[in-house]
Length: 247
Ligand code: ZN
Image 1: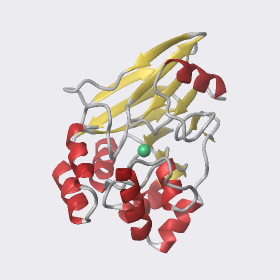
Image 2: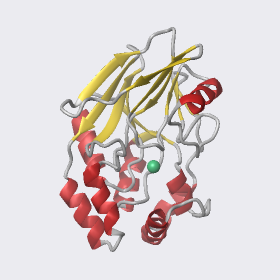
Image 3: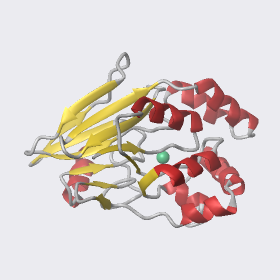
């Protein structure tokens, strides 16, 4: 089975459509690591697409806030404004569906796990050192896909040694690696809607459960349209600007 893993779409329909188009023909199933909404201008279109196409979906922190499951206390002012707008804009049906999303970790077909933040806490940011080791130790599977940081790539761990896995280079559109039986892996497919690793292109991953290979994809998309929709919706203009910087 080849699974297209997408995360942190954040209501960016143009980003989502671009990663799906780039992956077309190369996957059998869609799995989503959460944060479907928040920041972008198309929460309903993105939720509709994920509802229709994803086999497995877990919730992210922005989904919880939009669905009224969590307060926006921890959000900065930009995220708050976007969360209020998103909660008002989601249809009642989509809001109810988002509210019912599962909490990670979820193990997919006994092959790998998906979480939003980390295996031990769905809201934790896994970025370096001790967090990575603690997250790996809490993981039940050899491979866990995670989101939340919007930084494509991840980590492989053998005993106490952590090796960073980078995203594709700026002039490349993909990077493929095979799992080694000696290592455990935490892999971020990248953000399909608001990258924060300095590359404006959206990301996703394809995991081949038979070959045990991970393909990280990086895809150009219709940035201008996504930005224009954010401005026209009355969302904070900074949310449009940051998409161009990939941060
Ligand atoms: Zn996110």
